[in-house]
Amino acid sequence: MRKTTNMNIRGVIMSKKINRNDPCWCGSGRKYKVCHEAFDDKIAKIAHQGHIVPTHNLIKNAEQIEKIKESAKINIAVLDEIQKTIHEGMPTSEIDKLVYDMTTDMGGIPAPLNYEGFPYSVCTSVNDQVCHGFPSPDVILKSGDIINVDCSTILNGYFSDSSRMFCIGDVSPEKKKLVDVTKEAMMKGLEQVKPWGFLGDMGQAVHDHVYANGYSVVREIGGHGVGIEFHEEPWVSYNSKAGTEMLMVPGFMFTIEPMVNMGKPDIFVDEGNDWEVYTEDGLPSAQWEIQVLVTENGYEIISY
Image (cartoon, rainbow, N blue to C red; front, side, top):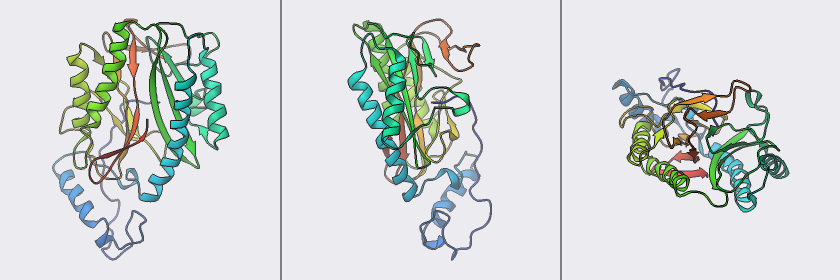
């Protein structure tokens, strides 16, 4: 889930000099010189080349990662249950109730609920809704619909976030292809996630696959850092170029969640609630979302 858009900042490595024999900033208890000094030196060199780099607070340590994974267990379980139960004739308000009940029963809190005034536990975006769809007893899923269910969980102060697409009943080949290509694009982006690469590498891979299939990527809304807060820096674009945007380093965590339109990329926000986003041309939109950790050797999917 993402409401605030386009918030990239240029990172700086350290706010103050750390002595080599001081405890490392990561919380490991080890001396800085044997822990993250070489890591910081490498980032600093890349920053001096003019690249955007992450600040220390965007880099998760081992303890934080484990706690985020515990949150993700709930998030994944809830989406798995939705996958089992979603059906033609189901009001989207039932999805909202399922998310709230299951999340709280497992000890978590639905992250969207009351976030910046959002009044529900989950986003349910149907057909030409791009994102932030309001669950409602009046929105009854019918054969031919495609729906994105965007689920986010807080557990003991740690956040997980992912979404899936569902095809209801007899979906047209055109809509089914949109759903499939959107997932393929997300996975193409994932293939580019590796330490010391750039978010733009991932973004261009997503973008190129989408446009090669005749679709477009929403420009104004993207992914985000996540884990310690619901929405952290950086803002993640899928209209970016390889070798640009923020540097990816081990411990960096973010979402890959391209919003792909069958028609043009233009969107508008419902003026009545200032949340629900629709395609300008009324054609369908699809979105898949995964939460990804950059590791020493590549990536790990945290929530899906």
